[in-house]
Every structure is written in structure tokens, then in C-alpha cells.
Amino acid sequence: MRRYARTRAFAEAEKTFSAVLSDPGVQGARARVEAAEKELGLELRDRFQSFQDRYDQAVREGDAARPGPARPGPAESIRAG
Image 1 (spheres, helix red, strand yellow):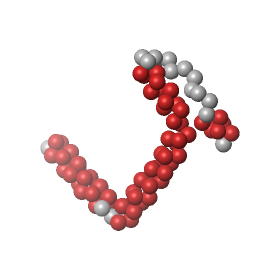
Image 2 (tube, one colour; image 1 turned 45 degrees about the vertical axis):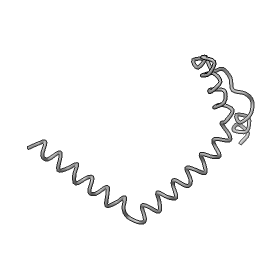
Image 3 (cartoon, rainbow, N blue to C red; image 1 turned 90 degrees about the vertical axis):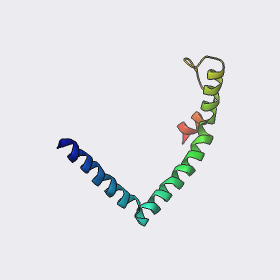
């Protein structure tokens, strides 16, 4: 009996989630959030590229446990901004 109740509850939840996610307002909000995430991701990628480059270098050289200090660059603008 418990298993049936749990299965039924999950089925109802899935139906509810599907109904909410298919709403045009929710789809519009999702599109706006995805666009904002993409825009901010591009901005952050530019700001943190030197950190990624240093990490990639450390991995290539087998020194990933101690990547060391990052090169000067984005960190300075983050502190200033």
C-alpha cells in the first residue's frame, strides 16, 4: 500500500511539474533567465580567463594540487569594481 501511495504521489507531482513548465509565462521566464546566464557567463569568462589558463597549465604540468598564484589581471579589476 505504501509503495502504491508513493508511486501515485510521484506521478501526480510529475503531472503538476509538466503543467507548470508548459505554461507560456514560465517558458518566457526560463528564456529570459537563460539569456541572462549566457550574458553573465560571457562576462565572467573574460574576467576569469587568466585563472582558467593557470589551472589548465597546472593540470598539463601535473601540478594541479598546487596551482599557485594567478597572474595579475582580472583579480585587480574585481577588487577595484
